[in-house]
Length: 440
Image (cartoon, rainbow, N blue to C red; front, top):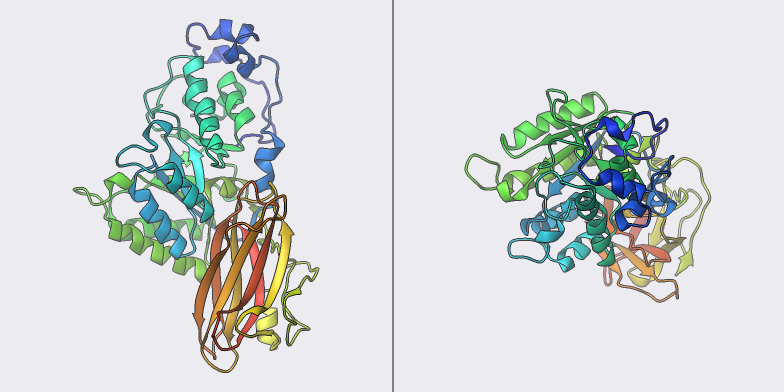
């Protein structure tokens, strides 16, 4: 349903407007009970804790946004997450606790690996059952279940309501419900949440409220092949919209539905649209928080205008304003780097709780011959101990600038992250320019 601390939300609608289950009134009136304390009669206004919303501050996009969402933590989601990662795309995966680590579903290790690739993991209720019958059941399905996932190391920022909740006080189908105790529970425990207006626009259900400056729409894509979803993306581009594409991966390859090949073909097409500068692909929560404007480069606009070479292991920083991606490459200045780890351009920045998913990118080409460029990302914990590094190699020609990019998930225990741009061991010299790190 969007950002939960949206301006203007007040206690305008009484809780009694929505039929409350038996016993809820007593729970609310008794702050000594677990549920009563959680519901907390007098905690208006309610906004998500700062630690939840901090990763989503200062997210910008000057392009239409597409979100890839898969529900119900099916085992095949790991394959699709890897296909996204290989195309430098991010997805948002909604997880039911009861299915985790069971046959045919994802494991905890799977989800942690997906999170390291920059994908978002979202809470999707404990059981994906029918409408909760009580406040206690609602709290368990929403908050307790999400806290259990967080205890596993998963960064749960968003609650995505299951479609099986389709009536009653716990079905978030109206912005006004965010001012009931049900909505307050969401606002107190998540940076964002998603609910549905089933009678939304003809081209798909829409999230509530329409918090994106372009408008948020949600479609379920499981039939019709690639052409069907391409048409929806083109419509989103034409109206500068925000489109979330939901797929239940267990339907892929079943009678009358799309195949895995359809999905991966679409990912290839979507990545091409992204590379052509027609859209941005973001996680669900990041998209809901995105503000109008140029995506901010976390590396302070390094465009190497005054550099012809870089000394070995230089800690390179340059303050800047707006990122001008064409400036360095078209002016003829760039950084020439030799093979191996001895000659890189390096930039460190504090991580902490301020980031989640980051795209690391730069433009590279061979100095005199085709070569292999490399991006290395190395995180450190609060004790300055190096954690597992991530790297990606990019074959680049000598005569054409190539845009090299990949994703990384910033984990809660990362205190800082180092970016190294260079050449692969044994490769010919590479030229780098216009390196960047942006939130996605």
